[in-house]
Amino acid sequence: MSKHIGTEPLETKRLALRRLTLEDAQPMFQNWANDPEVTEFLTWRPHGSIAVTKAVLRSWIREYENPRNYQWGIVLKETGELMGTISCVGIDDKEDSVEIGYCIGRSWWGMSYMPEALTALIEFFMDAVGVQKVRAKHDPENPASGRVMEKSGMKRIGLSEERFLSNRGIFHAIGYEICRGDIE
Image 1 (cartoon, rainbow, N blue to C red):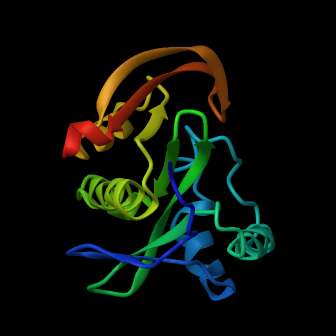
Image 2 (image 1 turned 45 degrees about the vertical axis):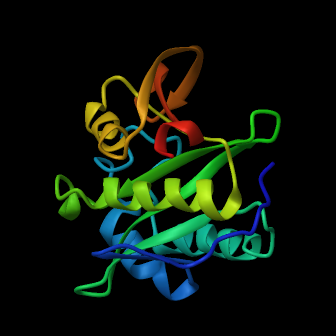
């Protein structure tokens, strides 16, 4: 049985994963939140102004008091630049599992930063929170996201029967998961 502890700071070789602050509005807006190419496969529209980004950040910051809230900013340690987010987008108490979602600015695509961040979250959720399973899903038209999941040790579990809506339209997601027994 998992014990939810909220967003804790995490570090990898190249990344710092930390809580977001209102001071992150400008880099978040500039680096990915206003970019239609980054948000193409996501469920939220590109931010039309920094005011939208600030409103989103305010709502996320308020949620940090909730131990079931997990929302990290991804910072490149070498430069201190905020380059994306990774978060728990769903908790299933019955299956003792969490689902992870993420996005990163185009400037950092293809550099293996996201698999590094996702691997850190898998370890955090398995070790510190105690979940039995970590899941993620992606649009079939976005195979790069599936490669992130595979590089993090997740296994493809197939196409969902449920349909999802992204900025591209309705799709059946490809699901991935990793179970506690897969990594021990």
